Length: 422
Ligand code: EPU
Image (cartoon, rainbow, N blue to C red; front, side):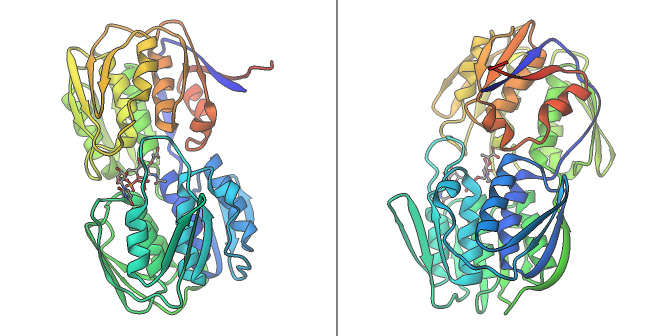
């Protein structure tokens, strides 16, 4: 078992380059199964969720070639199987995109019930509602999901809840359907737009992604050879922004899309930190004083992202005064607060609300990452704390952050990965 050992307290300084977006990549890889051809995907984050998806996609008959650390080609001309390996698909959340993609391409699919971070109930009723509206029959039972259709026909689908996963999954299932599909109350996250752009590069006709109404005109076939580069990761960029603020550091964040970071930029400036756009891809973030309290409510894009809530929680725990976070997306996303309290924070979490009484400083402690973003938050906390912090359960962090300790080390963190057997 590996752990991260961090010796604080270090202000982060220097340049960091952001990788391709995890939550775009994990949808783009299954989407590639819709292409009767070969696609090259660049700026792919080299993370464990991506490697797992590649393994699954290969088991379905696609051929994958790693051209470099962050570029692959996928040849999906021969899809020979629509039953994805159940044990592998159960390991993570994004395996649900195989349903939309294989249903679209082959009209038949079986996957294991998607797993992923334990953030509370994670129903998929809106995905199923969308598939059924297109004419599929969906069966959920014994830990598996099967979906099949004789034909898929476009329809109007109103999402009862703004859902990233359901919006993308219905897009995937409808690009090869007959006629037009309209998704109303669609999610608007940058990765929704990225997946739509990828589909359109393959020859699909998806319009309106990034607004709350997406229209998909079905096409007969997606074919040819295409190349696509994954959008920069909004959440990774936000993680480094908040790390710069929490550590009273000074970072140049490169290869990010500054437009996607506006709600975080606005919040940290309100709290007394500084952020300046150098160009559309580069942001300068620095902080040289104690930040002031703030109230945060997580919301779908363009609101404050739930996936940055724990990292912001670290900043608030060492800010002046009493702050409140209201988590409106996930019911169990405050598990990290117990770990921060072990490091000297004063946080009271109940249900979807947490109250942060700012303290002067955190101190090092052994802590456990309960999920991916909780893990990122604990790294930031360890960098800001006096003494030594040990972080366990690294498999969560490795699912979504590429070379995380190397990136933090390059900007001055004293962080190393240690095997418990060493
Ligand atoms: N929901 C339903 N029914 C559905 C789908 C969703 O009730 O059919 C509810 C969920 O329970 C939740 C809300 O709708 O309360 C939003 O869920 P959404 O479907 O948007 O989440 P998701 O697609 O499962 C993705 C990201 C998450 C991120 C959320 C919200 C991926 C693989 N995961 O999850 O990312 O928190 O959107 O932005 O894209 C992470 O990266 O750490 C992570 C958890």
